[in-house]
Length: 293
Image 1 (cartoon, rainbow, N blue to C red):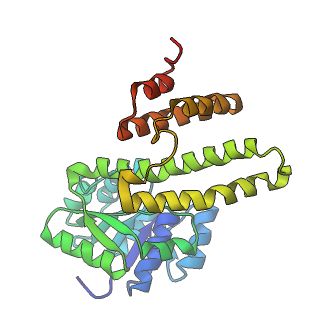
Image 2 (spheres, rainbow, N blue to C red):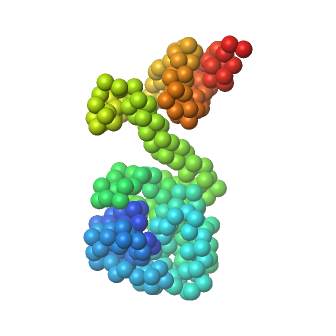
Image 3 (tube, rainbow, N blue to C red):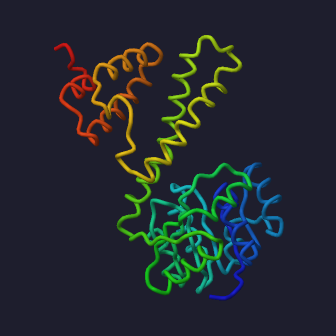
């Protein structure tokens, strides 16, 4: 692999911009990118200042390393379209950033002589320069067709300071489901927890209530995350871990009074927690609505 590759990015969204910045810092100049929305144009001009903003086929024509950082729903059509117009030269490294797809989605480009890679950063992105810093501590789910592709993928990831982790083609959907379950549903869980706590803080003035709730849960959630990553299931505390069905029933009543949908989420997660912790039949009676029957 050449020491320096001309990089093209389609498109300058949150992921594409961060990865482009990281590659540029590693010595691979970003020469072109595509950007349509005002937000993506703004990211491109400020964070990829040496990149010409061009239509996707022209980005591909200028690239030795082409990064396809588009939503999953757009990736198959983009790969087919670039192959149909002959925009990708043989020998071009084409890497997409999708978590759920492997390299099969790039087959139209591989058939035209491109080296197809799947490079998915296991990280969440906000659209700021902080994203690029976080990439340096992230793992990338890497899929390639052969040893040559694997070596190129690993080199690119290592160059930006991240860790490559091989993911087999047939396991990409499972790999991505695991990450989405952890990261996406954590957001939902925290939003619900803060909302419930806000409802409980009647004595706190309205404008301060959310900030107070967030301050209360922040150290608790940070400690819980640290504990479970170090200790696994043994880090579990609380009423389900203690097999305290009566307390869980009171929780469900209180949450239902605030928001029945929030109570439904609590019930589902508590039931999964009860399964993992080996809870007794009375706990499942409460969670499945059978108490008192």
